[in-house]
Length: 245
Length: 189
Image (cartoon, rainbow over all chains, first blue to last red; front, top):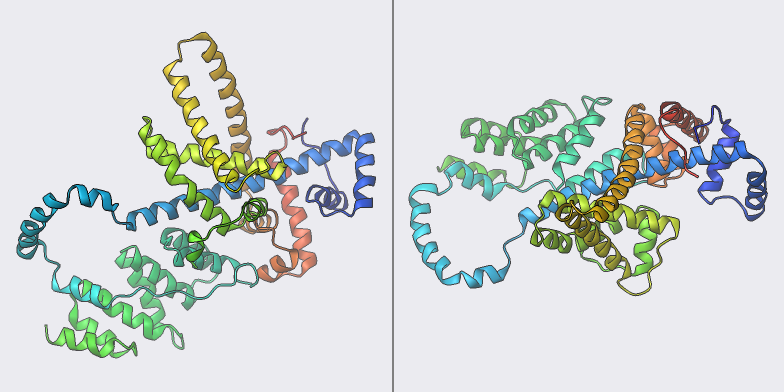
């Protein structure tokens, strides 16, 4: 059967109520009787059903892909199973001792990376109340951010930015998400926007993360300048560390 | 926020979660079952991407069968077992079809399977093309209402509309979608 030409709003909403099981018993019986007689109505119900199922399946497939990405990310953070360590324990111990000397000589993290690791802590994000606020998309992205799905969070927040380009909350969390994905220049761009926006509640935190970005990029002088503008509790300790280097 | 992945759910909770597309239930079920299936596919000449595709197809089968009432759990782990078994059989079908592709019987079997699969695939591809060509607001509005099961009042608040505007816009968006699929898709019975 082909898609019918036109369905009025009233008729569409009646069909929708039938398909979503939100009709009362009496209305449902009457509608089903009508369906038995009216071939055109049957066709219209079929068309609405096709669209409803299609929309749901598209959204469901997208959600499955998001879930998979989340699973992959979690796997990446998991350690190898203990069985493997036991089986290769002795060999690993020997390699570990040799490896330690190699690491000490050649691959020990540089000062900037050590300091960054010691002071960096990702912003924990905001509390969300999905589905009950005007900021559903923002909240959905916040859930992605908090579950470590940074790419998805960035995608959602960036699409919101088209409507609100100068929004400090969006800029701040985009900066935080890009920092988590080690995309330093994008992170700096967004954090800088926040730092320069007067009256933003995120300014102090933005300066703190800008200082840490400076540290990573070995620009210690700029880091000290940014720290001066932050009231982060770790500010003095980081200043001292940089001054004593 | 992340603790839900470690919770156990009853069959009734999982069933309801699948019916209403509850993200936390879907996430839990995915993470609970995918590792087993991936292990099976990798141990049987498969690759990670194939494991993902097969598992997601099986998940869609489970989801559709729960929604249509074709699947009803009969014990405390029936849903998880069903998901794993559907995925496992799908992979075994693929292995058999390529291994025995020269035999007449299985050729016929494979063709009919492929035709059915391709029909399903082309239907969803047509829908996806039409859906993605809708405006951003339409896509969000329809997804929130039909997938997330949000009420019109919640949606209206999110878009800064009145409830009547949300209702009218929903109808307009559905009309637009209908126009885009007209002549390209056959309707369901």
